[in-house]
Length: 477
Image (cartoon, rainbow, N blue to C red):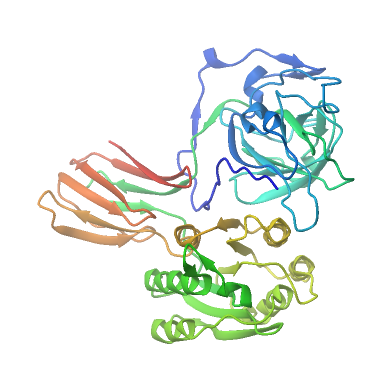
């Protein structure tokens, strides 16, 4: 089996700040036609960046470069030697040999344009062979919406039935649709290009995770999305959590990260913990209520992995866990496997929504990237409840994913390295005299900003953004 991962896009979106910059009239592209389809904005209509690529089995080197899917289509190669409808100017997704094998996928990003719902087809996939591709779209690169399957050069997709009229999307994920065995040199869909009939008046710059603003009077303030008042953590403690990652037992990593998370939560949050495993059982370890760090810490430390994986039962039980809670709620499920107790967790999640429960399950797939069936099941749970999905393959990535719950803390130092203020995004900041400061933002890894100048009657803006699987910050005066 051959697997190739170009880039894993991990994270979440808490606040979109300064996402768009207008393109000048002189940069607008002329219409261009490719194989019968005219794109009003020309070559700007096509995907610009590879976010992630995983080749399934049987793909030969000549067909495994995901960069070939960027930009406009090159050409449709008919009768290529050695394969049927393959082209070295395209990238193959591969063949899934069995249900335990990897499913090939490709995630692309539109940078200088967006995908929106227009009259007629909105998305065109230039697939050089006859194998259909499953198509999903996303606003943020983490939570995807399935919009059907396509085949052809190009194959057309109308996203209208699946989205709202004003929704915009920057990401497209293509994956193979299992069919008959295919041992050719470029099995599965062979993607040459992906074009969107969207607009080009915006340039996407990334997901902003919060902004720090110094007001004209010298106040230090943060613009940050308010966290949920109630958090229910659903943790997988099945026997597979006794496996190791980088020499550490997975349950020990989860315990450590959860304990750090508890230490960083605000004092006014309600927290509960449910676990599942236990020979196909689920248990409410701690009922939802005002945070009690000492008691929660001991409950977490006592956890031991055992049993199978009853995800469906755990999801169904959350309705009772939260039925008396009226405040904004966040349900965070962490699992390293697939349902193994006969339930259907996706159907369970859909059933809760059908009954009128206002729940969103945000899912963390822990050490699951190569277990494609399990990953898809968890992803589908998130999609069914309009939640977010995150991959976490090690301790650092799990910390990053769980920071969704606890906003970043920060510390302000004066020119003599004295701490003048410590706070957290989303809370009121201090009043600072004019001067030069160092600000350390407790992201993963930490971000240190030196020579941050605060001037009287001036505004200094610091924007923290997700970038290449981590975070970056920029200072604007």
